[in-house]
Amino acid sequence: MMTEQRKYPAWMGKMRGLTATEIKEFLAGPVVARVATIDEDGLPYITPVWQEWDGTQLWIVPRERSAWVKHIQTSPMIAVSCALDISPYTRVLMRGKAEIAAGPEPMQGQCLAIATRMAVRYLGERGPEYLLPTADRPRYLIQFTPTKTISWEGVEWAQQYTE
Image 1 (tube, one colour):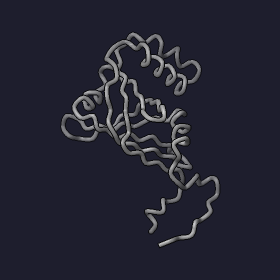
Image 2 (cartoon, rainbow, N blue to C red):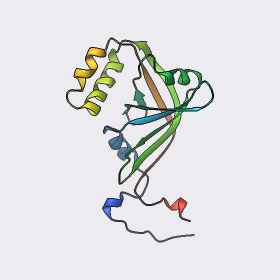
Image 3 (cartoon, rainbow, N blue to C red):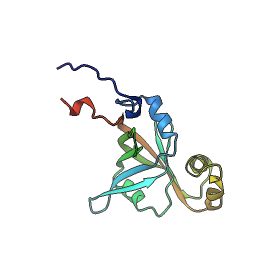
């Protein structure tokens, strides 16, 4: 059944899924990722983390003792939710496979570069003042490759829910 395209005011958002470029622009901001893993009891476990999206993969730098890293080692299939929780309610949901790219070890190389960019994005220009004194503390570098991505911006329901 064909329905007519409704016009929406700008404050309601795009009322559609995001393009790859729009996803990259959205995730370049200080958007916290919520990582969902399965714990040792088979229960969902959700952790808010800083993230860096390169257009293909999401990078995360957890501490050595982060409980959810063990979940990834046991079951690498995870889900990630990144959302703007105020209007226009931008959302990016991803499912896929996480891999430990490095660590646990003191931050260096790619891990340190990613973590430094994240510190600036989430804490502002003084972010490295927090990060650099902790660079010797062991961390992992997690590489998440989504196999499915769903995105949406807008306050109105997607058409699939209205027909």
